Image 1 (cartoon, rainbow, N blue to C red):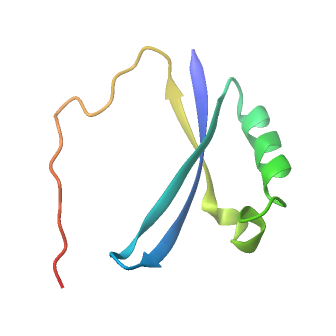
Image 2 (image 1 turned 180 degrees about the vertical axis):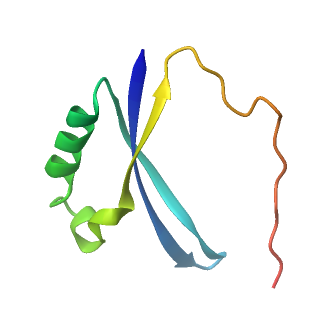
Length: 78
């Protein structure tokens, strides 16, 4: 079963430097429902101040694992 994960991602500069601010909006059963969620969120406080391109829909499958090879953490030092 395919699922559609809607994220809102934008660059944020704060006391810790620049990093991506990521918000999981929701998980949907169709691309169309994820698009509807974009339409309902795009004019809400905070979202309306950022480009529409900050919304990202990622397709995945139910019962599918990610990060199957593990992960490493990259740290940036100025």
